[in-house]
Length: 446
Image 1 (cartoon, rainbow, N blue to C red):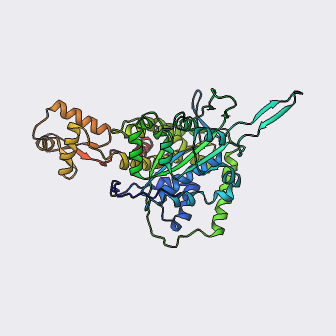
Image 2 (cartoon, helix red, strand yellow):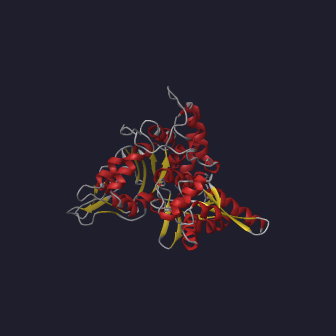
Image 3 (cartoon, helix red, strand yellow):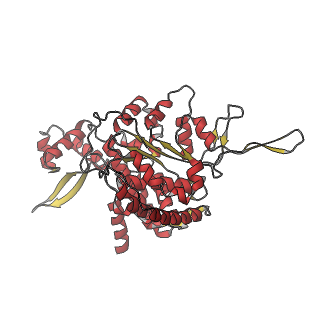
């Protein structure tokens, strides 16, 4: 996926260390493909893996679903946004590496479902439109529209110029933002006010877009509603970067790719025969523990960007399960999905979470940064020159803890408890995977 070639000199520098995908994410077929293809591309393993999951979920199609409540279910479809500099993000090579085996594993998906551009909401609906049958003068059925080219009504939108997609939202009467939001769910697509307009009652839309950090911040700054209306939080945001130099490129051996693709084909065929996937009992217990963690608030704009964490995790876990030909999501699938979500949260934090904190919270973080990232309550008061009282201090500390900015630890001196406050990731995100492992360990020991 090529980008627009803009100069990225104004982009915020990548923080060190950059976001990394935990080992749990490199599980099953997805992890094996990354192991095969990663040495032959400059793209980071994490961004290849997430893009592969989006390709796999799209190829699987709409049949298997996880029911999470009355009328509420999730299918194996993801929206992914690769965010990186146009010259060093390797965004174009990411999609090429991720989808390589699908040309053999599912030629119909590769030929009929891929959308190289998306100019309008009407164009999206047309790509997944229903078959239309009418009756002629003699009462015989006549097919007036054969419907989508892909019989499963899968659409995989490859959007290398995602900034241009955002700009199209401004066109008068354009419904692309709304249609993409609805396509992420299960609503019927179509404009009922337009006679003979295409409709889609069953669709399976997936998206992989690419954009530079500066473009993303600029375009969203002009369209703040796309953050608050739920458009952006439908995307799994991935910080794209290069991890090696390959001046002459590379590709896996044909025999290796073919062997993997045939195994992938078997997994896709198996998944397409399923209808309802369940949570295994032990996975259900883990999900009960994870659910409140995924609801915890984030700082500032991240609270909107990461608002669909629960839905994203179960969709990712569903894809991991289906690739293993499992009829139920197991604990390990949830842990893999949580690793991916931590990677996405860290990426979003790097891009959006670098702004100044308000008032007392910002002053506390400044004191912690000057004190090598850790301070006692007394040291905080001194660093703040006793400018805020205990009530305001407690309120600001609670806000920073809930946002994942700092961690509260209780030690003990010779005579009394010692309250320590440790600065966590400056981007305002705290990994959830270690907490999941701790919860599992506590269950095993109880």
